[in-house]
Image (cartoon, rainbow, N blue to C red; front, side):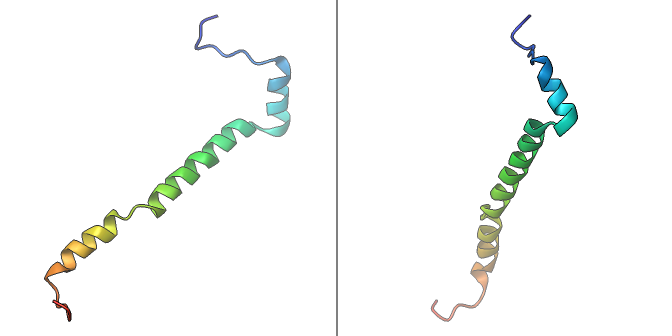
Length: 61
């Protein structure tokens, strides 16, 4: 067996068939949460809007 092969005990396949693949579902949910966090913390759109507004009227400038 090479290092890319993963052997699971027979009970693992039985648990997956009975309960679903919790590890795969968890991985998917974690990836979605990371994506949403990146989107929520992405301020690049705000910076671009600020740069476009530099030629507008400013009461202090």
